Length: 93
Image 1 (cartoon, helix red, strand yellow):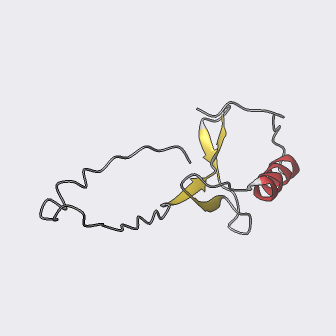
Image 2: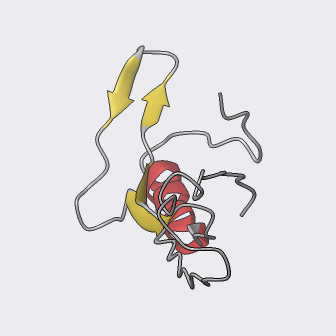
């Protein structure tokens, strides 16, 4: 995770007497993130409805890794079984 944040702690502890020590603990909690996969039919210019039994939303956290391989494979299988041609690789905007 690459994020730089600076805090001005001097203003928080301006009443300290010389020689005093402050121990501070900073806890970072990554935010929840959701990946939502939608399928768009470029010929009809409409979104394809994927059955709710096939996962299209995947949860993770900021800076984390989410494995969506199984879900994508199930979506590809569904689309192929229903007459769609699924490209091997797509560009994600």
